[in-house]
Image (cartoon, rainbow, N blue to C red; front, top):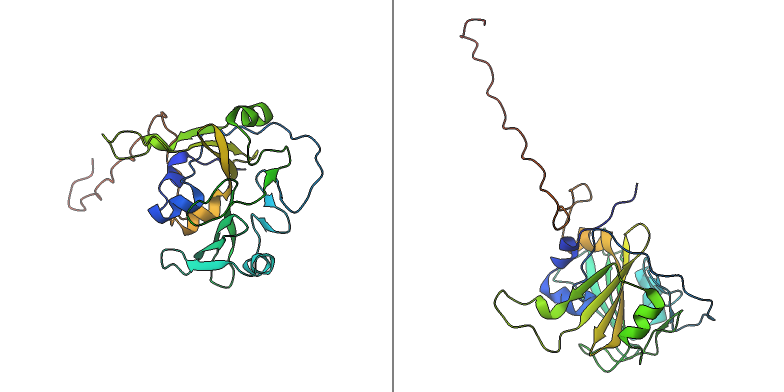
Length: 242
């Protein structure tokens, strides 16, 4: 049985992850994007919920990623042994790799920068199979993929009482059928400027440190689970039988 992911799980990523995975939040009821039309594939074509096959994609081994981008920069993620950040700046790619050990790290998040320079990452000539890329507007996005499973206004994510950031992006997030992988389109001033694909399980396990058996938080607005009954004291052996 597949399990879906609540937004609070990804929203609790450490601050250092914000630039790389853009604080992607999940949705209690993800929406599957509309089917994309047939477009010739290529080395710069992004597949939703996958990435770019053969170059930078979810589940890709570290060695294969380094082979595809030999000049990339790797940095330990928050001094962890089970996660690193990976930046191919000239190609416009930023990744998070995670895994059970330093010798078994795979791509858990891959971001493609489409416009300008972001956190030192240049822009790349990346487009989705349906043609969403540099120059695409939010109207193009919605006409192509329909309503997103989750809409996240980054301007409203500041501290309580602080005014919204005027230049903060909005995330249009779509999910695969199982709710295990998300593809987010980062929209700024009505333009799509970045695309990020996240594999939620390894991000939760290695960046948030959630155990695979730990239950997910209740979706927003749902009734909390009842508190368990308190333990009862053992019977007094000296008491007379009832």
